[in-house]
Length: 96
Image (cartoon, rainbow, N blue to C red; front, side, top):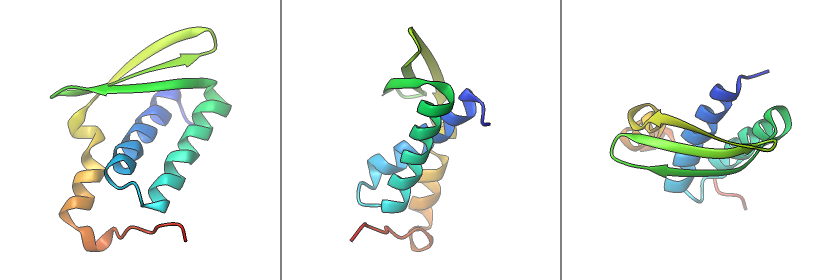
C-alpha cells in the first residue's frame, strides 16, 4: 500500500500533466489510477487544488475531516517540465 502522502504527490504530479495535456489518454488513465488509490485505500474525496508562485496546496476530505497538504511547485512540475523539454519522447495518445 502506498502512503497517503505519496499517493497525493503522484496524483498531483500527473494532474498537472493532464491539465496541460487534456488529450493525453495515458496521462488521464494514470491520474484516474491515483484517484482510485486515494479513494479506495485512503478514503479521500473532494480534492481541490490551488497554487501560488512557490507551492501547490491540496485540500481534501478524509472521512469526516478536511485536511490540507502543500507541495513545492518545482517538485510537482518536474514531469511536465521533462515532457516539455523532450516532447518527441512523450507523445499524446488520445483515446480513439
